[in-house]
Each structure stands twice: as C-alpha cells, then as structure tokens.
Image (cartoon, rainbow over all chains, first blue to last red; front, side):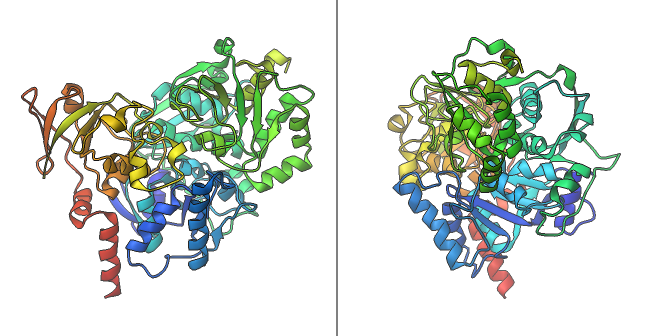
Length: 419
Length: 167
C-alpha cells in the first residue's frame, strides 16, 4: 500500500484499502475559516446533532477577511466566534491569536504525521508535508464531520513524483511544485494522491515541503504527501499536541504514474496569468513590469520565506513603481521576524508589513489590484480577478524572485542584484 | 428526473474565482451570490440567463477553491445542471452535497453548442441534444452518491445516521 492508503485504512478500521474503494473514515481534525465556516455552521445545525463530535478537534480560524475588513465580513467572523462560545470549541483562534490556517496548525502542532485531516479550504492538502493525509472539502462535508467525526472518501490512486539531484541557487520548494504543475497541468493529478520523493525532497527543509504539498490542489490533486523522516521528526517533536505515527509506502505500492525530475534543470520558475500551470523560467520574463509584490500566504508566508526576502532586500529599496506587501503568516512568525530584525529590513526598504491574513491572495483586502495592474506574488493562484479587478494580472513565484523583482520593478532574479 | 433547458457554453478550467469571485464571499446568502455568478468569465452572464438554463463546459470545471458558494451561486441563479468533460474534485463533492445536478460527459462537452436545447435523463444518464438531434452518455453516478441523492443530500443522510445511532 501507499502511505495515503495506509493512513486511510488505519482511519476506517481496515487492514487494507485500495484505490477506488469508498470508505467512511474517522477524522483527526476538522478546520474551517471565516468564509467556509458560516455555511458549515448553518448546515451543522440542520443535522440535529446536539454537540460537535469533539470540542478539541474542530478548528475555526478567521483568517481570510480578518481582521474583519467590512461589516459583512465582521458578521461572518462573529458567527464563528458565537458558535465557538456556544459549543465551547477548544480551537477557535481570535484575531491576535490567529494566523493563516495552514501555517498556524502545523506550527502549533495541531496536525501531525499519520493524521487524517479535512478542512473547508482547498489548501488543507498542505499537511501532507508532515506525512498526514489532508484534503480540502466543502462546508457541508465539514458540517457532517463536525456532527459525526467521520467523512466519506474515495481512496485515490497515487502518482509518484521523484526529484533527483540538487537544487540550483535560490530554487526552492515553490519552483519544484510550479515546475511540476507546469509539466502535468492544472488537472494533471485530478482526484489523485501526489506522493513526492527523491533526494531533493529528502534534503528539502519542512517549510519547502509545506509549500509543495500546499499546491497539490493546483494540479487537481486530492492530497500531496511526503513520507516522514528525520526532518519531519525534528519539526514535530516538541510541537505535537497529540501522539503521531509515521507511515511509509511499501516497495510494491501501486502508482498509476511515476514522473521523474532532474532538479539541476529546474530553473527559478514563474507562473504567468491565468493558470498556475502557465509556467516560464523567471529569466524569460524580464520584460514584465510589475505594480505590486506580495510576500505571504499559506504557500510562502513562513519565517524562512521572510528570511529569504529580507536577505535580498537588505540595504536596498523597493522600486518607486512598486508596492511591496509582506505578510507574516502567523503571530509567532511575526514576532520571530521582529526579533530577528527582518521587519526593520522590510520597513527600511519601504515595504509594508501587515498582520497575518490571507487578505490579498484571494482579492479580499490588504492589497487589491486596480484594472490593468500586475502583481508578482508568492501566493498560489493566478486566476482571472484573483487579486482584484478582473482585468488585473497575477504572476506567481518564490519569495527570492518576488523580492528581487520588487527592487527591479519588473520580473527578475536575485543574480541581477549580484546575489 | 428529466432536465430540459437552453445551453450556455464555457471552456476548460473554469475556476471557482470565475464562478463566484472571492470579493463577494463576505456573504453566504445564495440570492446575493447568484447575482454575480460566472461574472469574471462573462460579466453579462447573471443578467442574460433564465431559470432552467444549463451550463456545458470543458475539462476541470470548478477547479481552485473549496468554496461551496460556487455550486450554491450556480444553483441559486436558476441553472438546472452543469455538464462538463470533467470536474475538479471538491466542486464535484460540493455539488452533490448541496443538490446541484452535475454530469460528466466528454461527448456532450465536445458536441453541444451554445443555445442548443438539451434534455438530460438523470436516472438513465443520457443527454439528448434536441437542437442537433444527437444523444450522448453521461458517466454513471457512483452508487454512494446515488444514496446521497436519494436521502436528499449529505445533511439529511447524516441526520438519519445520527437518529439511527440514538436508537
């Protein structure tokens, strides 16, 4: 069996499951945010359940339009707050304690290896980086699971992606996953588990792994997953709030397809409008001028991402034609970045530093684009209108490329700054 | 169940931001969402559709976000059904969960044109194109999904389960 099959089997009380099988499985954690929880709350109340299945396994995180951007958003956030009080939820994260959900939950040790996690947010697949099965579902699925602690799944087929060799300078998890999506397309892994492995993955730090699994959905995947190892152990020990278990794929596990990549040939990669699969080497896009750069989101808002950005912009200034917005993904990251002096570096460079929020990634607030404007962002989607006006454009890259571009005023690479 | 209506055509990879842009997600009121359905794919769409119309699209319809607001907006706008070559998986789940009939049919996706009048026999999984006098098969609905439909959706199915457990 694959690691995905083993985790699913363990959660439905079976010794074995195989691709295509429908199962009803127990979930370890359920999450929803200020956009998806309101519908989940309404639907949960219709189930007739007297209580949630476990007060410490339902996480409500207002992060999308929080801090509350307008009256309607405030009403939605209030629904989460009221419900959390009424049902005494142990995992409600108020503004000031919250962060971008997929950065917050791993950081706080609330998701761990071997877990089965569902979330009413498509980027729930992030936690596969820890060796968990995690997938995005809708609000109604969350409502039913809040009542029963269970969710139905079709066991997915698995695709294996093997990354050989060493990464080029400034190339990170973001480039590997954008390159992969560019290779297989936005439905290249539709309904499938994307298992990532190889030398480059074994050497990839946890933040890079989280970035890669985060974007499995951008290839249509049900989940992204990496077999846990010493790097995983190092990350989860001291954080994990629950016991965890390492699962690994068997040597004879079945894969519908195996794709292999030579990392020495993977360049700094940018996704052009309007699909994440529309990738090009960053060096081929130096004619593209930009109006805004966003460093943040569940994809690239972690401390190491901010360090990378700070390393590039230290002693430099944001181009006068560009607005640079830096969004640490959690309160802890914000605080650590402050202690390390990263926030000083950003502010001295004339970038803006925001409190944690998903904000501009989905065109919510904190950096919306006007008609005809163009952004380079470390976020995960560049669909039409994603960051604002339907006639604006979003390009996607890693934090190093985005920051170098903020200085240059156009898409560029750190090398152009002598780095 | 027979679903008959006029077709609006869309291409491949219609994402959930095109179906319902996030700037409108500060509410989950179906009527308000319906006013902006498919707006970023075709800004006149909410005004030109009539109750009972059907969307026919290419591959990977509904890719992107997990927002249930997407199928809700389509349903609340009066669109009876969506046919596509393939659906993104969360959109697929969500549609069944909220009761929006969707059908996977590569043939129908390729052959049906905008403005065609079609009739879907949901039980048999057959799509008739009355304008072109053609017929296409839809992929069968998995048996568990059929069980959900018969129960009246996931919430009613769950409600029954909870009641059963209480007894």
